[in-house]
Length: 491
Image 1: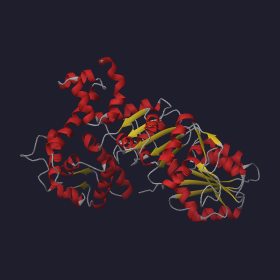
Image 2 (image 1 turned 135 degrees about the vertical axis):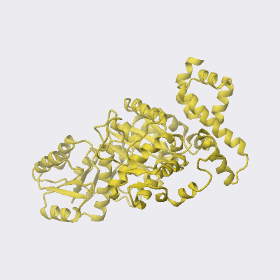
Image 3 (image 1 turned 120 degrees about the vertical axis):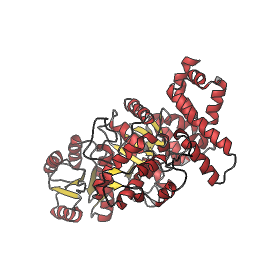
Image 4 (image 1 turned 90 degrees about the vertical axis):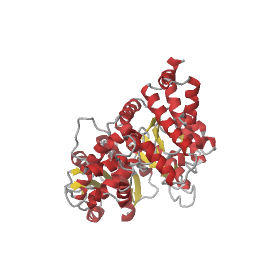
């Protein structure tokens, strides 16, 4: 199996720097090209189409800024890492303002450089590898980061992606952990009006609260302990492009206030500066949190929520689109066959049945891990029940699998919920099960009538007031807001 090879272009007029970087960085998975002049580097960027560029700011035939602009004309999304021997050089700062991925000081720390390069290659992948393909396409580059599914629920998601992509508006993506929120954000970007501009993804939960504001908006030298130089933030870097903020519900109140301002007028200040900066950035945000309850608890700003909630896409959990599981398993088997050098061609019926009936609390991410585990343990060309993780095999040995005495297939989800509540020692089972069934029924009916509550109440055989009461009880407030425009015809 051939590993994916990344391409790196290094442009520097010092032969020892070029030799050192080429020898230190090249590997079976990284091909390194070098150039000693700006002209040669621009030609190589055009011919070799690298995945990232390391560019010195002082070159013999052209300024670093001019070289940067010429390279970005070839591909405006290409990550360019600027390097310089001059800590206070204005050229490096200007390059960052124009969208350089990072700038580093010479002599280069190889550990730091490798970390930055890994992020740059990932950034390049996010912008160039398509997250959503047309139905008729069967790509040679089977990728784990691709939206897969043909269920009615996913067809609605695809329609929403198309609607959001065609309009340059803020988008809020809601869904449980592991449902593919970043993939949807990438699909919106790739089909959107700014697809030829940079796309930067930031996980708000992965960055310490004290550093997130500096990461997003930048800082001046001396703004806080450790701020030894000016840093350009992501919003300044992505000017003209798109920023994806994952887990925005984890953002601190102070950062929320700054976010509100940038959504209102595109303005912000770097930490430690009073100078206002203007940035034209499209924002796509995502969270697995219940923002309504966070607003009620004063943990999330209501005015920020209104600014984010211009266009909302709600992703269904995997348990609500089980029809997609076989096609997803087929896709993942192909992917991991290549990655692991396996030749699995099919999956045993009893193994597939178990996968189809599992609740999948970790959603698509959990399914990916399960299939990879299964292929690692597969010894032949058929993925059998014995290949699956022990926890799933234990489920297979229990009465939860379909049998002659099991409920009808369409009621299996209800039966599993009841068993789960019994095993967890919960009380009030009846109310909890009825609430879960109500929510599922309401979502299906309201989706089928595009939110027309008049039509929905007719189908359900209940009054409008009862329907609205059930919507509130089922915590469908977000869906209700989206549907309200369609409800007018029923008034």
